[in-house]
Image 1 (spheres, one colour):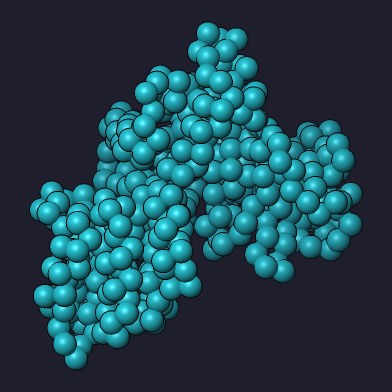
Image 2 (image 1 turned 180 degrees about the horizontal axis):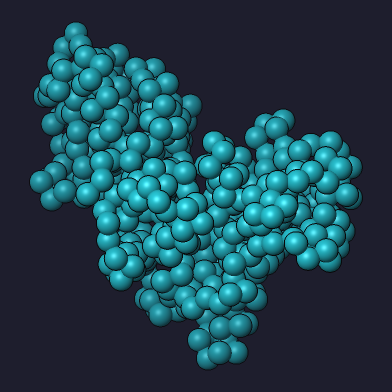
Amino acid sequence: MNALIERTEYLEWLKNWREKQIIKIVSGVRRCGKSTLFEIYRNWLVSDGVEESQIISINFEDIEFEHLTDYRLLYEHIKKLIIPNKMNYIFLDEIQHVKSFEKAVDSLFLKDNCDVYITGSNAYFMSGELATVLSGRYVELKMLPLSFKEFCSGIDEPFFTNAQKFNRYIENGSFPYIAKFNITSKEAKDYLRDIYNSVLLKDIVARLKVSDITALENVTKFLLHNIGNMVSATKIANTLKSEGKGADQKTVDKYIRGLLDSLMIYEAQRYNLKGKMFLKTNSKYYAVDIGLRNCLVKGSESDIGHILENIVFLELKRRGYDVYIGQLDENEIDFVAVDNDDISYYQVSATTLDESTLKRELAPFKKVGDNYPKYLLTLDEVFGNTDYNGIKKKNVLDWLLDK
């Protein structure tokens, strides 16, 4: 067993917001490492002089705390543990299990000596009434499973090349448990299927009251199989109907929303670079973890380009960007990454050693009428890091390990 993988950037985020009068929310798909991040942070607080009695920690997936899923009982329980005249650090893990939890959280927030941290495993727990009640009172950290760099830090194989590590990253997935323990590929697949079933049943079926679970699974597998392809609810409904797995467009749309809210799937909208407007149809969808995707759908060698796209998309999200598909007339740029005024463009390809492929990948960049950075990311080792008149070609593994 390896030591805990330090999620350095996430940990720094928590440190930066320490004791500031604002609620800290960490959201992310199940088992992406939220509880472990809190554990690492609590250990750091103790090492920094905080007494253990000042730390109140409750995980609502632990049956020991099931009686506290009433917000009034939760508030009263915590109030009894608060130490007067000292800062109290309150950690509430998987808070979505507490109905109307925002009332208890808001009351704790109002106390000067309470530093409040909460986690949730879906996007919709931060919607509706909660967003209204806590509006302007919280900051949110959107957590993902391990980056390739974090994954590499958990591999105790000094003679592994980056390519070998990347193969394991793709095959076994990026969830922390898999990197922390030296488990077999079969054990990794069993673990990933368990995550899939938990997300489907607890975060989608139960919430949306889905009666036709098979139809939901068909939509899920369609999206996972078609990562990086432009799809719409209409296209999915028509394709499934032709295969005798019918679900109408409205139902498909509902299932897509449920998958997005569960944080198992992410959407990249198309953006018209000339008209400066979002296009409402034919988004692209990416999986939160390639290992999870690959253990549920049969891939092929032709998938490698889309798998790389998926990994680059998630990495850009980790680095704080909003990520869109760039549309330029008939041309497309894989990703437009935006962070306030910081904009950059990315093309992703398995290889561009073939001259016609290189020409095709560079062409959309040449039609962009600005001087923002442009990157071509490939698996090439020969000519892996090159400059084409300001367009920087980089080896994708080097890029993933850069930061």
